[in-house]
Length: 474
Ligand code: FAD
View 1: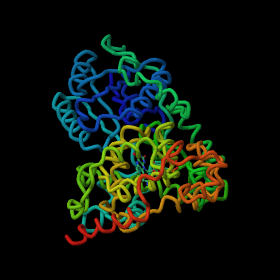
View 2: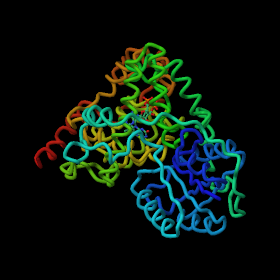
View 3: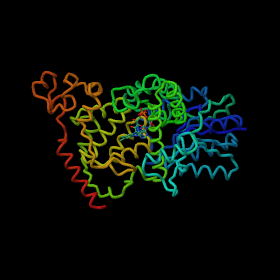
View 4: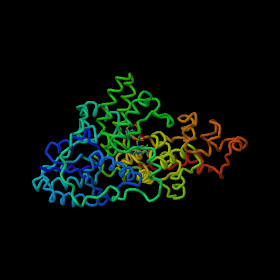
């Protein structure tokens, strides 16, 4: 008997219930299909493609070379594969992006009608979104009750399962491609530089988790807000591509917290994993989350079109050091610290008055953890239009944020080296530094580092005035 396991956002062997089911049936044909057609507007961005290339190579290696890779319509390719192999079972791990749900439902009913055993397993979320609902059956709009009354009152997440022993593989179809033929890598060298910071794949995920437990977890609660401290896990791309299941992170953190006496930090970490669940809940119940304001009164918000300001933000040339450090970290590593993501996003939508969807699009293209649910939910949260959102009138001051969360300037100095000789006092606001201090530090505003592209005080006031238009619609 042949089973096809269709890998998607579950690029791992361990704790993969759908894969384990396939293995129990007999010979397995592991398959990956790059289906840009069905993804439409949400086909993977540049950084995600680079990650995927390396992740597929790692998965193929752990499968002893037995990964059949294809490009094109999943529906057509699977139909051909079933005909060619005579497969009787088709398994996959559920995904929640609206375009995938729609496609997967179609594929499921088609193959079930043909008499195949089709199993879609849970493996990417701790709780299925439809199981966490308010008493009245509707979705939660506020995180704390979602977490406490919803998640923590539900049956606890499944304990992670070991990898199945796959030794019985179905023959590889001749039409299968090499991973390189998917052409996921860019022609320019930025992808290689970015990947120096990462080891995609299941082994890389295990290493990241080990590192986090050794040096990050015990400082998580406090340290997670300081971008220069190694207190966060760096697990987001692994969770996004399913190189680690959220159950592994959740259950292991419980044990590590007990063992290391830092259960408070471990609990805080699990709360962040639950924010991921909250994002997926929002996307599940509001499939247009990435395009439409959840709070429709924001539809009248007077966003400004300004490609030149947008470009300066994207390139990390705003003249605001913490914003520039974040945007350059993103470009160089495909990642940005959460605190800094909040600051750069607030700067875009509030100080520059640029539509959150433009920021979301840039993150989509440049983040290695670009995730439809998390990205859309977070941008709407920052913009004020989302569920349980930060109120619009709460506007971060990026200079104060720099002083508070990068007090020794290590983060800014790493990514904005042209300011590295400035004393800490002026590092987050060089425009206020006396001329002599700038000269001594080799900083010449407007020459080797930009003047701020907006005045923070005036742009804050302008944002508050713009927000009045939203309030008028209440
Ligand atoms: P840790 O602090 O170690 O957290 C552990 C895990 O919990 C993360 O890997 C992530 O899966 C989850 N998590 C943590 N914070 C959040 C959060 N606020 N919302 C949802 N899940 C969270 N995260 C993405 O995974 N993909 C995105 O595309 C994305 N876009 C974002 C855009 C903006 C504007 C903002 C403000 C945040 C965004 N986030 C996104 C959330 C968060 O910034 C990242 O998940 C986090 O920085 C990843 O680093 P980490 O793995 O070290 O996090």
